[in-house]
Length: 404
Image (cartoon, rainbow, N blue to C red; front, top):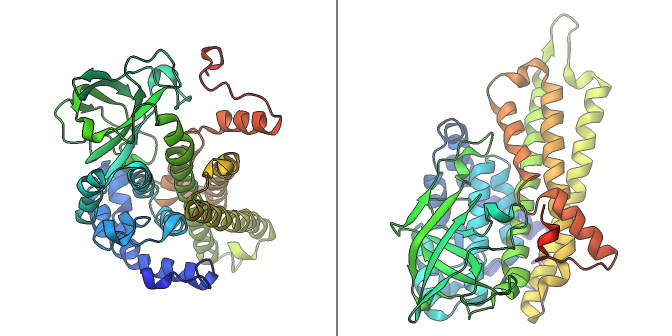
């Protein structure tokens, strides 16, 4: 797909639609048909992820040298959105995987890229292991701390809400740097997901049941010094410039997709639901049409915003400039996208009437959509951060008195 990428058409509608059309067969033939089964059984969507991997979509941001499509953050956001239209579980796993792998792209050395990125084309899956129960929604605040073992490290950590927990082939794990008393002194490690000391708890959730986003424990995990990302203490830069901005753009795009999936589901129902007594359909009622129009208008604004953000990301990356300048905006985008998904799901349930409460696509959408609001950064914490930036107040990210 690298031949798609030319200066003149990279961000054109035609180019974006080309990406959508290329990934569509996998979505229609593999991901969509398995979505209901995954929701009911809670199984991990490995079949869908393998199909994406073989076509290069799990390596969408990588250069061709590392088996990628080199479509940048634009390609990533579009694919995450498209998957989100049919299955939020698979989309979240996908977004976390690409975000975690991109940390290696940006900060890893060639040895790490060879060992961890090349296997992705064969189906290897990565994810983040960041948040901790002790610091709750303040996911950047790690109380766990790595220990030295010669040139290697020992990690003991209890992580919460780790997508693909117990299923990932590697984890990008955040923890406090050894021997440091400064909570902002953090480091990132690549942890082999097949280590026997990794224990994931069952994920029994309201929605996104296939994402396996539950608690996970790392018990006396030995990590080779080869798998320290960058150097000790680089974690804060990785968090600001890599981990957070990438994965937030990805999950926000997922919720944009979920909103569109909800609208498509509602439109199909409204067009086909006929009242034979009055010989009309739900589409003949103005109040119904206005509800659908409001969802459509909100989605349209988000789609333009998404493309603009992805374009800025790609431009800054190409110029070697920090993407932290977009930190507030991408958080704002996540808040709006997740709340639009929730709104779209509620409207879909509304226009479906009693039919929407039957176990099936409407109620699954309703359950899945709700997950975006508490997902890190939770919308309450996100709004506080945006307001502090707006008012030029200190974020105090590691001030223990401001934990929520």
